[in-house]
Image 1: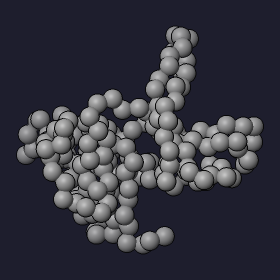
Image 2: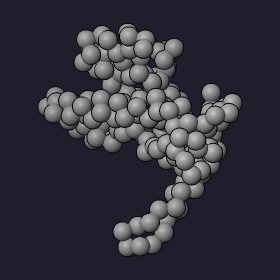
Image 3: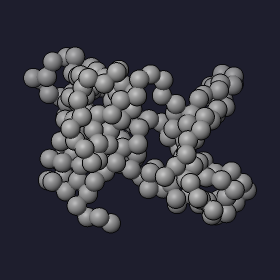
Image 4: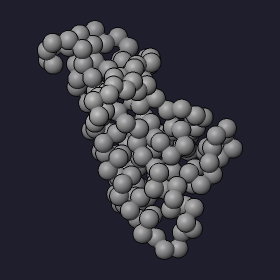
Length: 172
């Protein structure tokens, strides 16, 4: 389990100006000995989901039968920007380790779950087309892997996904 708090990240733009971007910093409860590896699984899951999502979007965008409204919204689907950040001077013995995600503004919706797959598209802020595309993505990952895995627990704001999970028949 993790706790989340607001984080402001200063970036330097190409013109040299500074910009503050809102992020959400997540830290493990009871992390007495923080280490980057504690957040590595999350980072790998986000990266794997991004790769699968990009492949899925290619399939959707090449489909000549789908209405243009579906293709336009599919093109917007992405995994939230994220990073693992440490504080301290030694990467092997950091003071704190955070999993950062870009803050999402808008109505937070749940497209699919990893336990209850009976969600409806009548949630506040839910776009029925994106809901359908997200569910199709879960189904596509199952079919594309020949039934070995699926991406689920899709949630976020609009087409931006946060905290995806990948369920695989190999529990390791």
